[in-house]
Image (cartoon, helix red, strand yellow):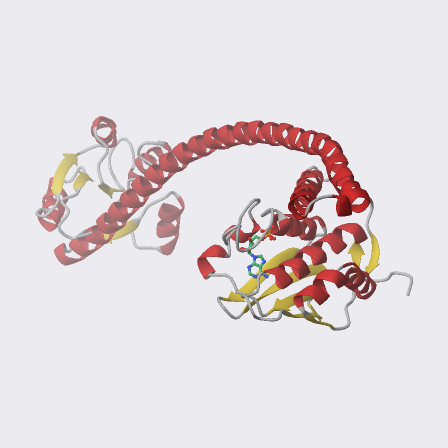
Length: 397
Ligand code: ADP
């Protein structure tokens, strides 16, 4: 902003023509000047068009300079116009009085051109800066008000959408839960009778028929586990669970190893489990969480590589972290975010079997326990899934 070249509109108020001339000479150019020889005339001129600065003689017949100053400062439209008092008085009490009434500065009579010019220019610059600031804050205020209106509108819109989505989601989950439940019953019958037929009459059937029966039973069992996952997922989504209890993860993992003995042996998995803490939660859900993580660690391994799984824990900042580390196929960095979405499968189904719900379920379980689930992975070398849970503090001890 180049303030020095700005031509301000200056009103000189004085009944002495000689002083008027001297002041005029000092400020023009660059500034424009208007004159008034009395307070009343000055007020009229200012009402029509407020000036940028007033040079005011304090001793005039009729209305005194201070009286006019008071009127200017009480008028909301004129209050910001700086007023310089031109005076023969030099005692401090006079100046203090003027300053208290809102005078911006004083110029001593007889006036000296250089001093008038410098003092006027200072006040003109300040006025200009003040006007610019006012303009900016007015624009900001308007922008802010508009932004608030927009924000309120989009907030209301968002709330409506969220409400509609919530309802739709609840309906969908309810539908999924009921239909999966209803599908499980006939499916159990199919799997059960296929098993009985294999047991009781398997030997009477030709080899081909026995193979078809086995395939039928395997497919039925796979579908049962998919439906189980869907039911569990929708239950968790609805926030259905019992009150939490202390769960000893050492014991939980030992039981899980027993349950997973067959696939562990079948795949030749080398599983090391280090000491694990107790956490607050739901044993059945936590068991499902680690079962999914261990099953994935056993499953997503390149052909010909024996799975090696390491389960360990650490404590820091009130959080326990349980890490399940494998030596599997790893996950590409751009797939990491997709991993926890329901039905996300990063590999071909014919290579690795699964519902794509396992990790979505794992994340739900961890979050239902007030924790987070993270993963680090190196493609081709292995992955580390980390379960971060609040530390359990036994209040009885
Ligand atoms: P799935 O039922 O297919 O196992 P998950 O939700 O458990 O579904 O896993 C989603 C996808 O994440 C898997 O299909 C697989 O591509 C990838 N994945 C999960 N765990 C691992 C792992 N330990 N190593 C490599 N990839 C994994």
